[in-house]
Length: 109
Image (cartoon, rainbow, N blue to C red; front, top):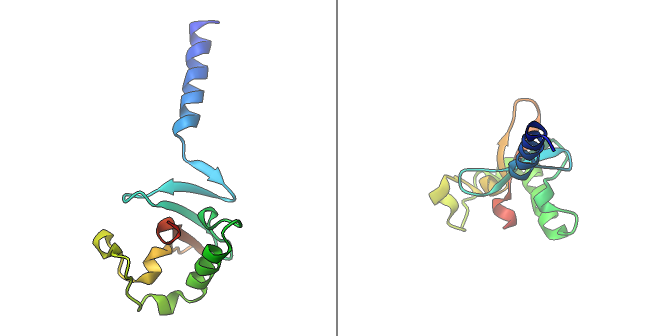
């Protein structure tokens, strides 16, 4: 094998090992506090609230449907120290201008 070919293959393989994973229809990454984050079109739920976890899926669906109410309910898990202001922040990182929702795995862990 030529050195150039070997280096090209090594670079491609190494990049695949450190790249964020794409699952479902959104990229799953990690945020500054180590939670998984996934941005999806409205109506979809994050992969970390997977179909094998029906209670967690129901909670994430509830959080999207009742986000306005949840913003007034304080969280009791102690996550205020990482910047969360309400229970909504444990599920939803942001509602984006393009209509997508960015979820956080904080509530799923």
